[in-house]
Image (cartoon, rainbow, N blue to C red; front, side, top):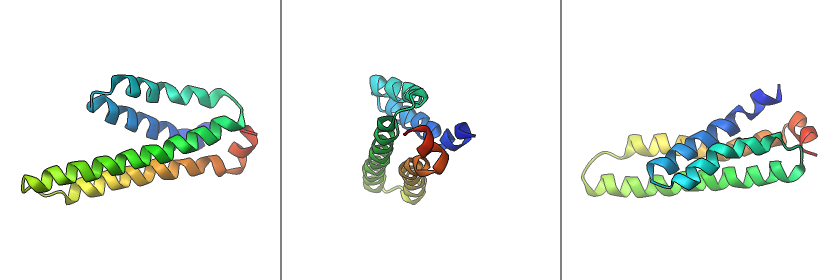
Length: 110
């Protein structure tokens, strides 16, 4: 059951890894792909560290949204769809940190 609760966290890690890979940050992409492996460690610091990383990941998506929207705007192209998609991904990534606040995951990572 905990695996299902952790799916948003794992999905967010994969998405940010894809983002880093596309931006030619191969090492960061590999780190993000391997990061879910620390979820097997049943320590409190794992949950807290992952929460911080997910919020930072959300901020990376926001930064990318602003960057790409400026580029599209300068080229005279529509940027609204891009902003909606990246905004939803940013929100999803940041809110994924809340799964560690569920009762079963709090018990696992105590």
